[in-house]
Image 1: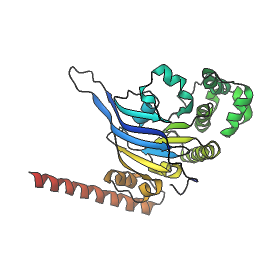
Image 2: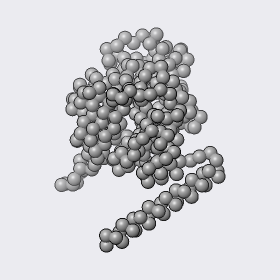
Image 3: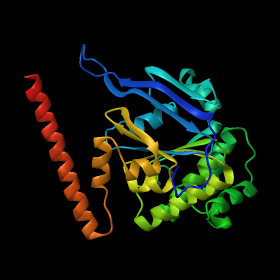
Image 4: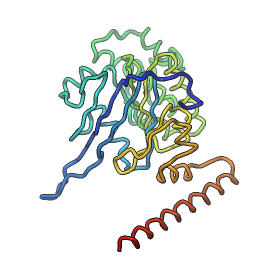
Length: 295
């Protein structure tokens, strides 16, 4: 459990990813499919935030898309409240989408700039057969700390941080049990990032929603997560509490991620870079030792 996140998560998983595989076909004749996820297993409990961290190309976004039915599951299962949702048709997934929502990375592209905020927030409600009055819009706006009268304005009139608040409000409209957050702060400046992270934590405390928080930034997941999973080449290579992963990582890849993360203190940053170089040199030595022993 992260020191910065209050409360504990129940033992029963809300979502259970079991030996998940995702592959995409290639255009070349007789070429084998490209493996993106290779046997990923991960549980998320109710009211819990699991941070999923890794560099670009590690497979973390593909995992989020697979949970949402946007990437083809070629092996394994995704259980949501014990039900295998990876085997559902797209129509069935849409009908059951109320409990599983998403906040995307770019608040500028994820919202229609020509739509009013009221239309944006009521769209998922109407699609789900729910009531969608102005009182609901005002409640959602208050929940993300935006003015109650903002519903009549267009999305293009808001800043990046405000648009991300609107995107969060849209994800919360159907009272989901789990929200997949795909790099929701990476397009924002550091001050706005901090405000959005605080907002995510406030919402979790009041609603009990669980998050899968996808990012490349270990500093971000340390702030918001109960547990952190580290992905490399389509596999989870380390999983533990936020404190353990960010203070005492065991896997060499996690250690490199931590060493590469920027810090405000120049002296500490220089020491971190030196430690990273030492780790890389040691790994190269071990590789040479293995090659020499097997040659």
